[in-house]
Image 1 (cartoon, rainbow, N blue to C red):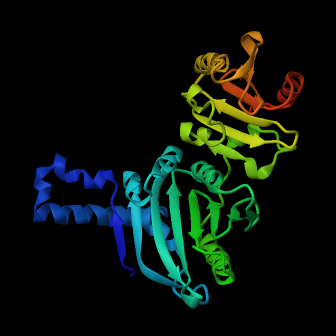
Image 2: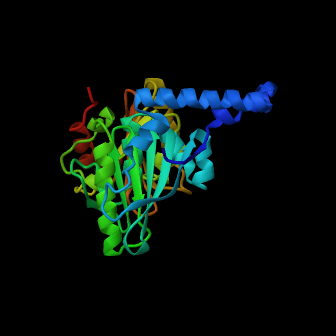
Length: 327
């Protein structure tokens, strides 16, 4: 059995302050029993540490590549100790656990595999879309993997697998794809993309631009100028179109919350210190130009807030008329 260093989440690390009797030797034994029970439970459900370990390519499974050092596991808030300054976005999407393992290959090359278990397949897809680049090469088919300069991301089910090679030499790139294929083959199921993506018209979409987010950090990656002006949404989607327009759709808990967000956004667009040429079209639409000369249009429809960047008002209205809420 492989050696593994576990970084427990707050539900384990916070036990001692609340229950002083756990601080002694008996507490250590009881805590160990709790971790064993959790491990066994995860074996039965296919999740947790046991489920992540099953995804790791075994010794000798990929020719020329062997495990190097111990595996490490970080759960919950302890992700901050592993990703300095970058954990918030994972937690916003629904992070659970990550398993990290290095592999050594030909000529001393090293590849690191990170297997992130997210709350569900939608959370994993959202994080995958956030991480992948706009110019990477698709691998694996079905839009589930992308190769960058020296890294590779795969999304499958509730798991996001990131492989980093640290250089772009041929041995490293070949190893990235081989280890990725092995890990993907060990990941059960396929998982569905979030149903809310159907809000976006598939026609004319520039596929690498497709994004799904669940909070302000994700939105900030596609609309930094307005991300603080539309709080309270539950999920959102975004995409660029080859017509020159970009679309963002935000879903709110109800029509009232959506209307409140629209009014706040209308106020922001009317601020001459931030935007130019404000246009107020009454209750159904507001628009203004940003610093790059692109016009931003916003309109509420029930519990959905639609934001379009680029194009004329007539073109935007025509474009929005082709879109509908996913059923």
